[in-house]
Length: 88
Image (cartoon, rainbow, N blue to C red; front, side, top):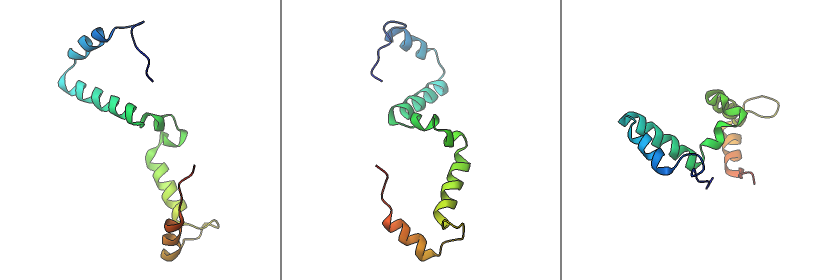
């Protein structure tokens, strides 16, 4: 982060290249840059995010079950939610 591209390609050259893209390509580029700047890019490198659907299903299942793999009661589930603290 914070590096310049002067040694390889100038900002002006990059801008000129971007101007040659279609509107849809520019929109995709903007979305990708925003994702990168806001931190989503860090998730791409995490192994568990190779399959986001499976990851979400796994963490939901873990949250709904006790350590012995039996289903928590609604009261247990909500108690866990109330007591939850983010990892540091």
